[in-house]
Image (tube, rainbow, N blue to C red; front, side):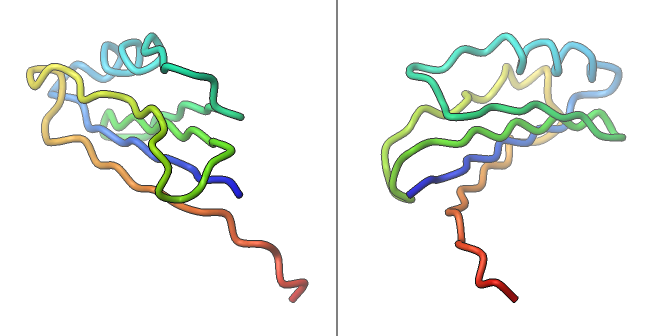
Length: 87
C-alpha cells in the first residue's frame, strides 16, 4: 500500500522564490519513494511525497515555514492509491 502526502503553501507578497527555495531545502527523516515540487501562479508551492506505508502511518511531513514567509496556513492532504479498475 502507498500513501501520498501533499503540502501546499501560498507565499507572502513578493516572497514566492524564497518559499520555493525553503521548501526545496527541507529534508525529511527517512526517504520517500518519490518527491516532487511544483510552483503555480500566485506564488503557491506544492510538494508531494509518496511513501510505502498505510494511509494512517506515521510518516515524515514537511513543517510549516515561518509565518512571515506565507500568506495563510499551510494546507495538507493525505491520499491513498486506488488501483485502476480497467474502465
